[in-house]
Length: 143
Image (cartoon, rainbow, N blue to C red; front, side, top):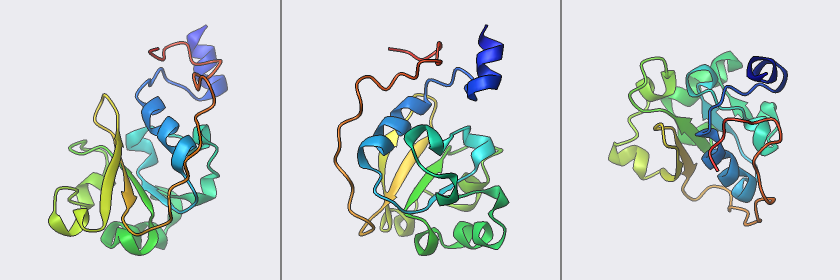
């Protein structure tokens, strides 16, 4: 029963997450991730990342500071441009030259969520994604 699996495993048939999850599994080598957890619906723990590495709406003053100057606090940014609920996309112009001098896009999902990595930040890991990263209780993911 999909509604039971959603509550049990925290999945809402959001297949778009797999692109970013797979990228982070292969390349995440530490650092803070700035994201609006609610708006993007992304759960970093799916990529094996501890939630303490996420700067989100509940991070207090760090959240506010990261929205104003993300390169000082974040190595990664997950954003859904144009989404009215995404506070990150409302505060950070990802098309601006200043932002693109500091961050580069590294993954994009089908529904418009982007993953950015800070330029000159931590070096990226290069490990294989465990075959296949399809999540045993993820019945809606596209193959």
